[in-house]
Length: 421
Image (cartoon, rainbow, N blue to C red; front, top):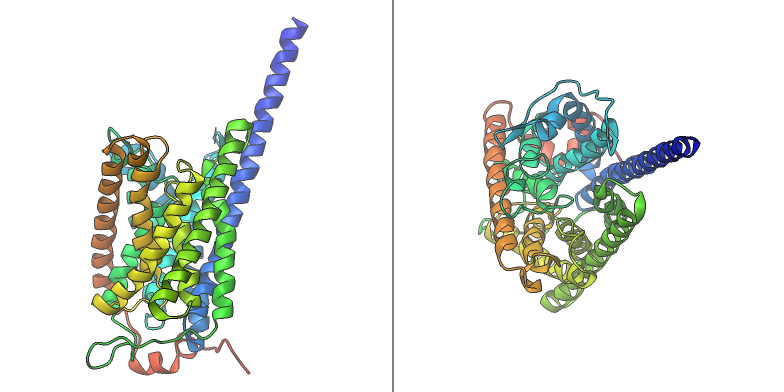
């Protein structure tokens, strides 16, 4: 009897330690992902002009603040609530569950909140230097409350993409998070139009250099650092040998892909433009990070390097496509980094997954599912983005006046200057 009681006590202690360790890991990962927010802000600030720095910082503060409240209010349950027809979750207002499902439900809420904020902040870069701050606030609310949670439910909340015979695989959000933000941002950038002076009368693009690549580079390093929380944290557990092994593997593939993306962009720009370009190399690292996010758990280290290299190449040619062919002004290259590289990385899971990938003898089933998921989410984000920004454009307006754009958004939109020398 005493031995039985002792075994029960040991089991209870072990279970409690497991929950505690997993909770600490998820909260630590959430903090790392939250730290990506200043990374995004610094990239955008460094790649744009100094007269708009305050506006960019305000947007990044505001979208995180709005997203945190709205996602708690009902976005989280719209994404993860009881499945309704495979398309969205049942809404439960003011989420306050004290339950524990592996980790406390509130820890899961916080972790998913910082992901939602990431999707929203991606759009800030695509529409930088000419968008009304008030209009940006409206968008931030809608994407966090509606656009992101619904497509997220299809993939992570038990919706139709996760219920296919061969489920769509997006471990940490190449498509779920990054491509959603990019495709919505593409619609916003198209509808708001290019910055003054971006294209000449012949429609040829002109470079508008960012004012501080030191800040931009620091932002990329911060994002690279935070991405270990983004990807490895998505394991949602750290206790036990299996979870420990998974976290280590994910961290390794994440790092290798980022490095490969940076190097492939570096050498490709060297070949194309006769010198290695810093801005494209920085974005190449980000493209590698975005590209590996979907399959970081199920590709080999070698596969991660291949995905990163391909993502870096897609980034370089994607920037030219967006800028010169589509003539969409994307000041920081976010559409190429998060949209094109995200979609590419998601599809490449169907080739490089060690279990089910075409190159590993798994056939085409997973590859087909990846294509379906990428196309479905892109259609959703592009469609809702077009509707959202069209409504804003023809009601409150999207764009600041010519005078404000030329003199800078900081003083006119916020009443203060960032640099006072």
